[in-house]
Image (cartoon, rainbow, N blue to C red):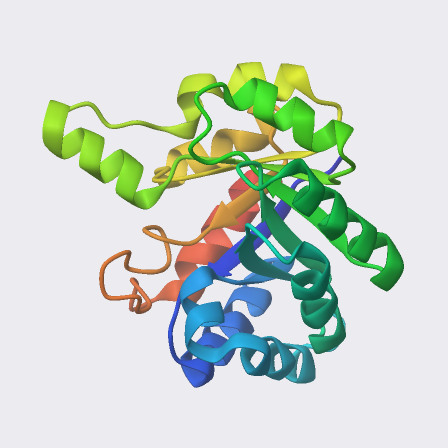
Length: 226
C-alpha cells in the first residue's frame, strides 16, 4: 500500500488539537489521531469536534481498549472515529468484541502489541482475531524506564522485521522514533507512519513541539512519499 502519514494529537486542549490538525492537513498529513491524552481530556466530545471540523478526514481514536470492547468502539464510531485501537493484552473476547463493533459500525480496528514480550506472535494473534492493522508499539514509560535503569533505549525497530514478516495486514511502528527513522518506515514494511511525540508533540508537556510545525511536517511528508 502507499504510505499514509498520521499525526498523533497527543494534546489535552481541543482547540489546540484542532489548530494542530489543520496545520498538519495543510502540510500533507492524511490521518488524524485523537491521542490518548486528548481522549482522556475531552473524550467523545474531542472526537466529535475533530469530525465537525474535518468531515472527510480519517480519525483514529487511540482508546487502548482493554475491556468493554463493543461499547467503546460503538461510542467512538458514532462520535465520528473511523479507526479504534484495542490492546493485544486485552482478553481475546474483548478483541473479538471490538472487531465485531468495527464491522457493525463501519470502523477499522487497529491492534496494539505494546508490552507483549513476543510482539510478532501478538501481532499474528491480532490479525487472526480480525484486526485490520497492527500498531507495533514500544511504550513511553517502558522505553524511558528501561533507559534510566540500563542506558539502553528500546525501540520498535528492535523487532520490526519479525512483526512485518508475521502478518499480512499493514503495520504501524510507534514509540520514540527519530524523524529519520519515521521516514524510513515504509521501506521497512510499515507504511502507516505516525508523527507525534516527540517529533511534533512534546512528550512531557503535551504541547506542540515546534514553532514551525507546518514546515517540519511538510518536509517529513514529502520525504516519506519520495
